[in-house]
Each structure stands twice: as C-alpha cells, then as structure tokens.
Amino acid sequence: RITDSIKLHVDNVNVRYEYDVQAKIISFDSSKLRSPGMHTISVLQEYVRIYSASVLYEELITDLKLQLDSPYLAVGALSQLNVSLSSGDPSHIYIDFKNGSEAYLFHNEKSGFTESFDIMFSLAGKYNIVVRAVNSRGEVTSSEALLVEYNLKSVTAMVENILSLEEAALFHLKSTNEYDVAVECEFQYSDESFQMGVTLLGQEQMTPVYYFFVKYGVHNVKITVSNHVSFVETTVTIKVRRSVLHNCIVFLGNSSYPKYKNVLLQRRIDLYYFP
Image 1 (cartoon, rainbow, N blue to C red):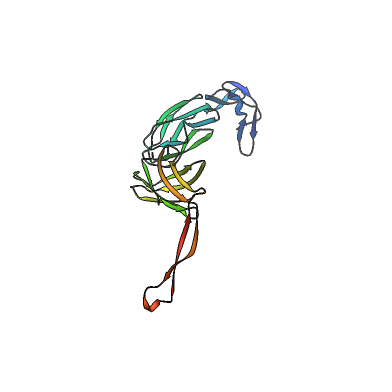
Image 2 (image 1 turned 90 degrees about the vertical axis):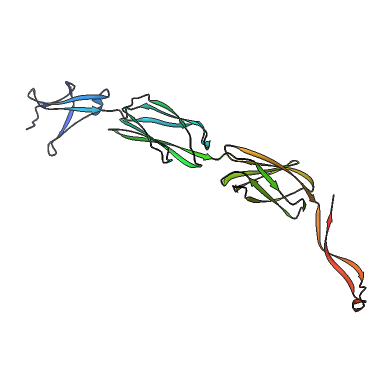
C-alpha cells in the first residue's frame, strides 16, 4: 500500500513526482533522465524499496534528412543518396526506394548518423524514396522525389518542303529509342524559336508534330529534342512561301470541241507569291 510517505528515486536521486490515488499511477518529469540509456526507477516507502524497474530512455528523433545529388536520373546511371540524423538514437532506420527492391535497414544507430549510397534504377518512372527512423519516443520520416528517364538516342525529322505561311508544317520525328519518352521539342530558325512538349514514340515510329512558321523563305530548322537527362539534335531545310491567294480563276480560252465551241473554259487554281 502506497502512502504519503513514499519517495521516488531516479538512479538513486530523489525527484519530484505526482501520485494519482484513484489510478494508482506515479508520474514524474522525464527530463530528470538527463542522458539516453537505461535508468533505474525506485519507489521507497519509509526508506524501504518497495518497487524497482529499469527504464530505457531515448532522445526524440529530430532533423532526419534525405538528400539526392539530383532529382533526375538516367536509367542505368549511378547517383548518390545521403542520409543524416542530427539528434536521437533510433533503434531502426529504414530506407525504401519504392522500386520493389528490399529496403535498407540499420539497427541501433546514434546521433550524428550519416550514410551515403550509390543508387541505380533499371526502369524509368517516378519514385518517392523514403527514410524512416524509429525509437520508443516515436518515428520521423523524410522523403525525396526522383524522376528516372531513358537516355535519348538519335532522332531524324522529315517534313514537306513546299509550304505557305498559312499552312502548318507537319514534322515527322523518328527515334531509335526502344520506349516512348516524354520530351520537349524546340524549333530554332533565324531568330525565331518555339517549344512544345510531346511524347516521342519509340521503336522508330513516326511522331507527328505541327508547327506554323511566321517568316517566309528558306529555313534551316534545328530541332532539339530533350528530357531532363539527355538531348539530341537534328536539322532540316524547309522552303516556306510568302502567301497564297485561293480560288483564283484562270481563263484557258474557247473549247476546241464542236460541242463546247462557245463555252469559255476556266480553271480554279491557287496562286503563290514568292519573296
């Protein structure tokens, strides 16, 4: 039976405590556990130890960091991942790459923990790498997003050579990539440039890209196809007419056939103006 005459010792040092008579619970300020590790909690009544227990005290985990060299990585390329912990003594640290591989696991690490990894992915995709540190005080997580992309291989372009400013140029891009790849296409000619995002089809399929020219003439168009980890370039030469007047009527003269002797022949054609 606990009475008002009890005392509470932590590592044989008297500490202030509170006693809940109904719940029969003794509580005290855990800051009295001044350092991490095992501590002895004792209850004394009239100088007689009536209860004793060992308690593991662990610091709260804080400042867990996960850092990548870059948020982008090419398939099959190496990059470095760094994990650090400023305070707290985790019983376990898990690192999950979210790619189906087994998570890294560390046991009983201390404050100041740092570790570096060489990482590589065999498939393109978006990965959310997560590190989790756990002890008796709780757990802390940190994460970083990583975009893994395929390196681009050669690209060729084809386009109709005779166009007008009123027509959209239809480029056919062909890639030797094995897979479809999301890319950015930049068209550059003279002092003009234009960018658009497309999905470049793999296995040498034709990828259609439409583009309107704003200047007439003969243009050497440089096409740059890029993603976050690589780029390729190709050049095509295109002749663009100045303008077109549609539905002009051209008189061809009288018919030489007797049946249509007095019929004036005409033909509707397009006329182009060149610079």
